[in-house]
Length: 175
Image (cartoon, rainbow, N blue to C red; front, side, top):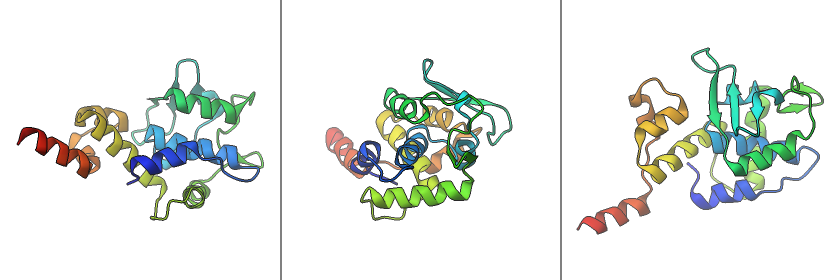
C-alpha cells in the first residue's frame, strides 16, 4: 500500500517521454478511482464525462455497467490527456491500439519506479491504496464497499488497513 507521500508523489509526477502524459493519467486514474485493471484498460474516451466528473465502466466484474466518481484533480489530469479525442478512441492506447492489461501492468511498475517509489507496487496495489486511503479518511467500510463496487462487505474488509499513526492518535485520544 502506498503512503500519503508516495500518493502525492505519483499525482504530482511528470513522467518522461512521449507517453508520459498518458501514463500519468493511467496511473492516477487507477490510484484515484480504485478501478480494476481490466476496467481501466477497457475504457474509451466517451466513457468519461468530465463535466459530471464520472467514468462509466462497461466491463465490470459483475458484467453490468457501473460508474465511478472522478475527483477534480483527476478530471484535470484526464482532460489534459484526452484533449479533443474521438469518443470511440481507447482512453489508454499506444499507436492507436488499446493497451492490454499486461501493458498497463508494465507501465504502472515502470512509472512507480520513475517516481522514486522503491517498494514493489502493482496495478492492484493502486486499488488497495485507494481503498485504504478512503477507509482511513472516513472510517466507513460501507463507503469503501460502494466505492470499490463490492457485493459483500466481507470482501472489502481486506482493504481496511488502518494507518499506524491514526491508530496511535485514536488510542491516545481515548486513554
